[in-house]
Image (cartoon, rainbow, N blue to C red; front, side, top):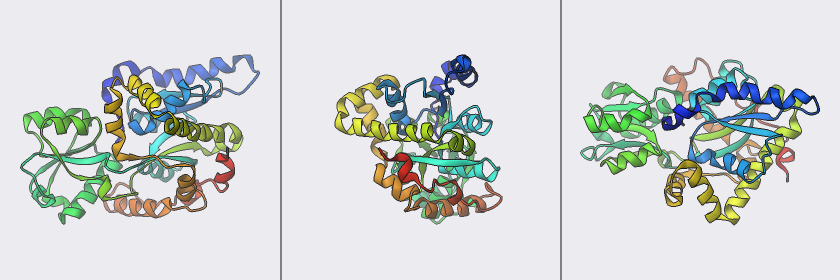
Length: 326
């Protein structure tokens, strides 16, 4: 559920570019081509672009390509157009289900209010959703948010009408009265709020359940471990820079987004970015993410999104602490 379709018009050539640039770079045969990192527009992924801007991720070692939406990012990784990708936990499990070998390199962020159910003013309580129309993008994460919302409301799927739709259509649907509630995220969440909608339920009500990850193909990790681990280290280095120079970092990111620094800061209020130590707890020796993955598995199987339970543990890097040590 990570996409900003406004940029799609200037982004459709990127999958082709992702194929061509590494080939051109490698023509001299002197070194390996840069790692191809596929990402989609989402405030939590912005440190990647800042890392490039700061020179932490040099283009001869790694190149970040912003694709129009998360589903395109997912497919670019699935078909090996990308070596590394930013994906949600549900997308990662979906890849594992289809037999794609991968490793989880980093937890980029944890949604803590960024994903939300925005409702019309007359819907004041979760129970008021009964008989109402809920619009959402019909992907695992959207279905998961719907399931958790209905659980909290003590309602069943038969109690609501689900309308599959892209987040870019939600403002128009709200204006035309075509739906009563919307499962969405920023910047659409903010825009709906400006039109009068309010947060009825969000990811802060289900903490530590929605994760954004950096994943790498297993064969790429095994062949180019040093370069892959360096990408993770530069991500952490960028987080340090953002903490040390918050105003400069916010200004740079906001400029790239075409927003004001305050608008960017508002976008990330509902996002928690794990530190080095927190990553070790989540996907290193602590393996805390496995509990969340199992819960997600159960919901997705009940919803018919997954055919079988997926084991996430084999995708974790056994010696992550060594990999990301700076």
